[in-house]
Length: 181
Image 1 (tube, rainbow, N blue to C red):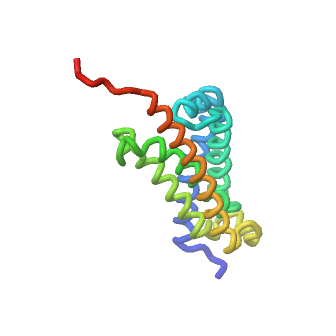
Image 2 (cartoon, helix red, strand yellow):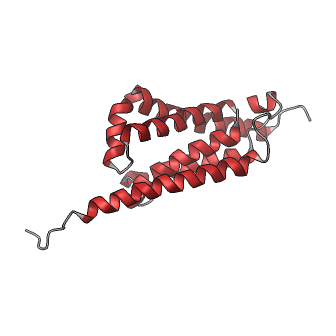
Image 3 (cartoon, rainbow, N blue to C red):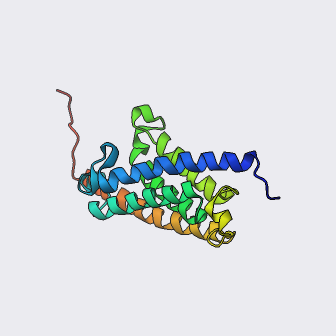
């Protein structure tokens, strides 16, 4: 079948929306665009929430968001793009998880939604309105999906685990007040 159908259009819209938002977030981290803090400010924030070294963490997160988001929007290397973006959102989810689910309370709702959308696109593929389709899926093979998602999940688990360990260790030195004043 050579004609496009509503699934292709739906995947295009999902890719453009998810990829565009992720790419914009990446530019905030890397370049300070759209009200972002750039590498220095984001690096300081990353360090303050347990991702160390902060600058390297900010660079990795920004590149995963900008690169993964751009590639998702284009529908190119979709398994790797979706996995990279989902991994970055897994790291963001870890920061927001103590605040509960809803974004209004500083929760992980937004990061989880972007991560799940990116992972879903990695699994379903980009549709026919994509560069992957135009290039005959050279960088969008079926075997790439589990490899990309498993590799990203393993790296994300290690990075988030190390971050959580640093956060726990930092809290060990803090003592809560015994009595309210």
